[in-house]
Length: 307
Ligand code: FE2
Image (cartoon, rainbow, N blue to C red; front, side, top):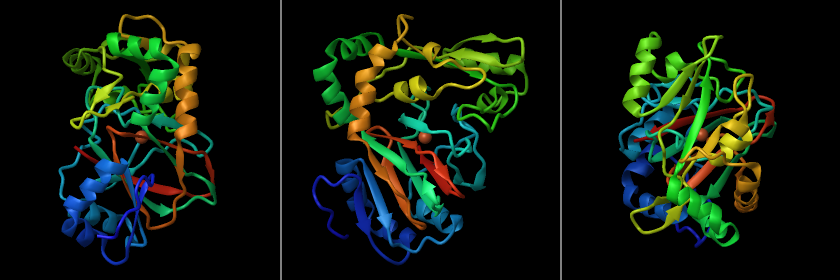
């Protein structure tokens, strides 16, 4: 496998030819590089269409995490069995840094992204090492870090009755919870330890059980593994107020003042991945946060999740 320079973030693996074959033949080296860098960019391989991307994911050889089973808030559409649109929120909507589905008890271990069409302007995928964020945050805001460590966090999200593609949080409760009716939704929420309340317009407010906001990786690294930044900066639509979206596990609100240091540190440590058509990225979801910059023109970035 091509050498990767030390401390490059994301790690870039230049190549050519068939990415599926490359991933199959170099799985151990790819995984070692991924564990080191947290995110890898495969550039220059021959990945002309979503089918080739699907084949590359298959070539990597790990089981998928299915969107149907997840509790993701994003509206998405499957393109192939393992590949779906990354988020159908409008181009002007910024999706802020997050670990995929860290606001739920069910999240993927890794994510693949594929750029089929790069936007004319903007549309980069910001990437941020969450272990570096936590390290800096523990120095600058030790009280906040000890509070989230001690109490955990809870998220509240209001889901519409029907998909609302105009919102980054627009997935309906029926789809999110794979439920045909209110009784089915309540049964699923109860099973997952959520609390909930029904609103007059048919939307559903759901509050998670207490979730960890700091995660210890098997190798001892600790990461700011949560959805706090995205929830605080981005969970604003006709149903959701970011000031009510996040609390400490004991129910105390997490305020703008609490969040300011984490947001500033993460912004400073963020690297924008500027897409070229045919690019494939592999991201360790426990180590690296991602988002989406606003864009102009047509952009098609597809995703596939690894269980
Ligand atoms: Fe995401």
